[in-house]
Image: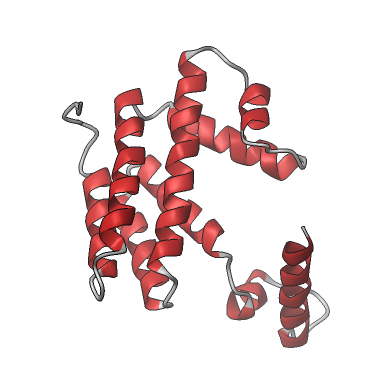
Length: 173
């Protein structure tokens, strides 16, 4: 929590120094605040869950343009799809949101409860085999990414296209 609070304090300082009036606006925040990579990647994967490939691709392009680490992007994507997979498993087993939150150690109030609910809602739109496939492809892409010097953006774009290309999955052994 210490690093998070330090980052938050720094961002608040930048915004307040930038704002030219007593009330801070969304435009002030957007102009100077640095979004956390995990939050931006969550928007990208959330767009995939909502079948909005254009938005997902746009977010990925922005991340790569801003020189975010492809390994970090994939790491956050992998976590999202692991959370989605376990959410799908929990839904299939009739388990509660509280049980799901406990599994992922999602304590901390309203924000974590909302995040858990969004993951559970997204999981309803995917089949269990697709979720399993997405987790597997993220793991395989991690190996490929670490052996694709200079091609990292293409590797991530290929994964995004593959995951968005429909939900028909050829079963794997």
